[in-house]
Length: 445
Image (cartoon, rainbow, N blue to C red; front, side, top):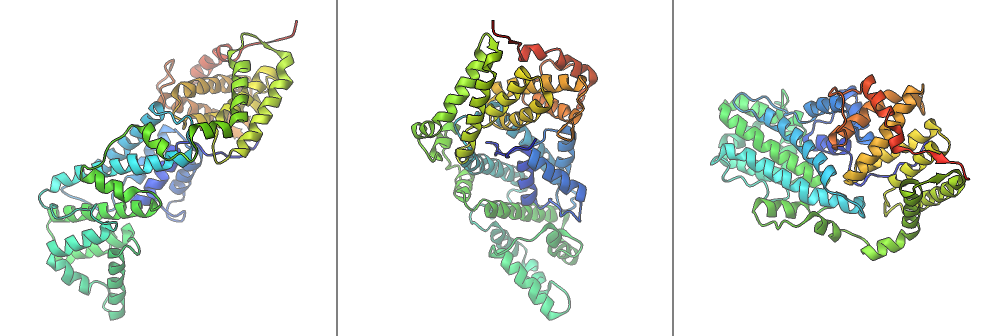
């Protein structure tokens, strides 16, 4: 069963890691590390919460491109990555984006949360080198690489002499290398990690030929690294107001506002206009909630009427594509309809997969926990009734994914196993909760 893929409101954890790997220069081409590249793309598409995969991904993504003898910067960067994902998942639990779409969530996340975390991390790391970086302000220009090169030339005159000779003995190649450095300074392109820190990289050769002290090597490496990733960040977010906010935050001039006040500034429509635009859809969602969730009794005669409302709502979702009217509500109700009226698990589960994919990135934690519980009970019941694959995909890995999502978002209080993979005991445990989630449908009297 194939669905039209609708965007989640929050970017998935995989999408976030994918973007970070581009900024850090740690995303490999397939020919370099096919398994890592494949797993990263899978995370970006599925938004996985597989803890074993996440651990491996963090090790690969938050990795420094140079060796260091006196600094624990590699450990610091890895710890920053772990805390960043914990912080992001915490947002999914606390800040509901009900009424918003990616049109609002992306600029809000980039311009305010990402910028703030960036500034705090760089400033915390630079404190170790004060007063040696007192003349280095990476936030003074939209081209931080230019800033760091100027600082490097002023602080280390031998770098200027080295740069003039950098390259092969062939004068044309020397000129090409110098032109390349000049382009870096002017923001025309950004050097990759190999060009700077590889065996024949610019900085590697500088340290080797000029015999730079280990402390100074660590200082230069980290400063250039920050400038490089900051310029990547500014380039990748050039359509947003990132530079202005980075400057204000670094100068303590940024005025913090409540998240919802910021989000409303990005709204294309007023609240009244948005409700009017989606009125048919919202009425359908409300009607389905009354019939399937709140009604004391569900009668079999309602089957066709409820299905017709679901079909209407799905058509409205396509019509309101730019508005993103929280499509997972209908995915949930469609899956529930199959379970209540037909007991067809193989048709219900794909809808619940979609519902889970959407709701875990909505910030609506109460509803997230309800839908995760419904998905767990229905999928575990199906599994124990002999349904091992759905839509050609093995069901058990999805059960483990549901468990990890529920643990991460605080919906696994009844956990009977702390193992990362779901156990047979847990599957039976959730099967026994089926009737708590899905009531009987009564024949009409």
